[in-house]
Image (tube, rainbow, N blue to C red):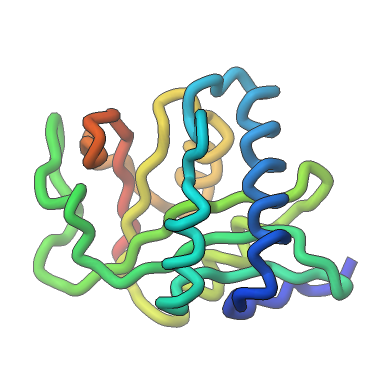
Length: 165
């Protein structure tokens, strides 16, 4: 396959993003992560807001969308308090990556997204569900360090990671 290209999502991409989110949900379920992205999470309204704010991205390979993610400048309100640990770096501005998903057959989406994002910033924070072993593996593989636990606005626990270079 060719090199993965990253581009901003547009309103016309909403059905594609929703399909990629569903692919991501199915990948998580098949790996034993039964609770993350349950119900209507992430909501269509949140994805539309990501697109409108130019935080939503598509990963394109061979003319086909194979992945999506949101790349959002901080501060993130859920990252103000971290428990059972500490952020690696707290003085510099940071970005957050949320809502990453890909097709089951695609490879290299996480790496391509990280390459793109680290061209924009040297400080990225990500959180993930305790049962999302695929994401945890990718984070460690790409130099992120586990920092502690954060809680989403709805009270759900997440494992928090940061990479500062």
